[in-house]
Length: 174
Image 1 (tube, rainbow, N blue to C red):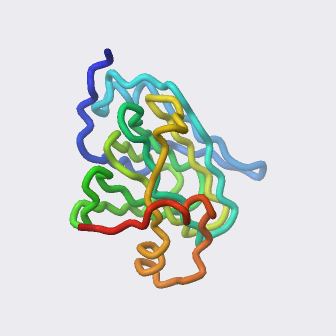
Image 2 (image 1 turned 135 degrees about the vertical axis):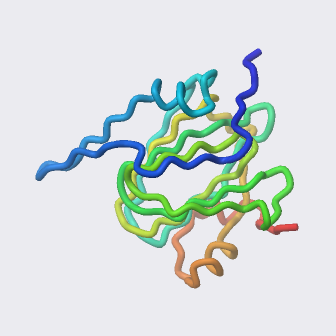
């Protein structure tokens, strides 16, 4: 059995990657090995990756997580756009434990396996990459409906959110 990682709280790395852009677009190289060697995740194994593209600003995705035994450590890489990222321990949602980050292209956020994750797009054309230590498990995939929370947080009622996320249990902090 794989030893548990030492990542107990989220960890942010601002402007970690160098972006090279020209008239064609951009290139965002990153050394995953270097990141893992230096940053508390030496025994992390990449089992699953996904790309998230969100066309419109004022879109909310989350708060998602996988229940035990399928919990996932996430490495979130922001390639394009700006987001308000929100994480909190999902086992006992408490507003005092909620952490928000203003993220933009070049930033990396490490998210422990016991945290729910969601983000609100502050710009259009947001491109994120997730590198996870476990595969997607539909039987243990769940989350909280964060529409009310995010609408109040940003002062907008026209936040775009999926029907799937609206059907999740309502987020109620202790």
